[in-house]
Amino acid sequence: MITVLFFANYKEELQSERLQLDLQQDWQTLGDVRDHLARRGTPWTILEDARLMCALNEEMCSLDTRVKAGDEVVFFPMVTGG
Amino acid sequence: MITIKVQTAPFDPGQLTNSVHAGNPAIGALVCFTGFVRDFNQQQTVTGLFLEHFPGMTEKSLRRIAEEATERWALQRIHVLHRVGQLGLAEPIVFVAAASRHREDAFQACAFIMDYLKTRAPFWKKEQTSTGNHWVEGKDSDLDAAHRWTQDQETP
Image 1 (cartoon, rainbow over the protein chains, first blue to last red):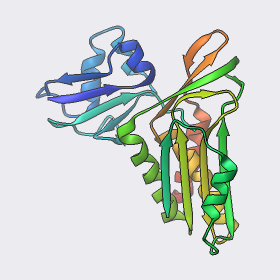
Image 2 (cartoon, chains in turn brown, blue; image 1 turned 45 degrees about the vertical axis):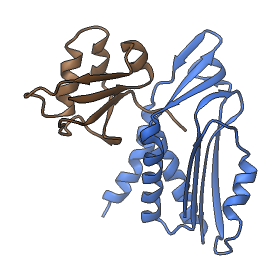
Image 3 (cartoon, each protein chain N blue to C red; image 1 turned 90 degrees about the vertical axis):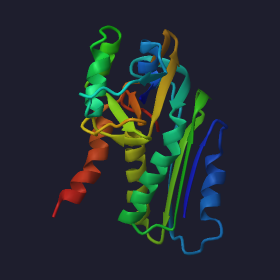
């Protein structure tokens, strides 16, 4: 099982803040999790955003980062603080 | 010494500036940046701002950025304060102070912290405008500004 969180317009458009997903055998990376969710179709295709950013266990990372059971994965649009 | 704060309450930039310098006569230079809610952005009249963040990760990200600044420059103090929640027009959003013995380290560190904060800390602005509310889009110019610090390191 992994936890997936969304923020900002992703959270609003997906109408979802937090998901629990069973980790599939063919999911190696955060990119695989993202692809799985995007295949649900609209509105989940928003996760194909070229400016999507992600974090694993509260550390910013890339879609190539490996995922394992118990991880907290976060997908969010480009940050705009400051 | 690094101070990181994330809060909903407004702050007084002048008071913060004095507090960063107080009690440390080794500080010869103090560079402070304050960001405010401005009335116009991306072709819209702005009336207010909501700032969302990821509480678990925000302070950790800011601390990491500040620590990286201390590895790059000789600094006496760093103070980073970022507000979240509902903000009114002209209110301060963010305060970054870098204190050092000499001005160049303070100038560079303050700019570096702001550039990294704008591209690596999990904050998102939602603007309230005369035509509705919308999420602010990230800008390539912010990515370019942050990238220059990486290029500097790559230069032999």
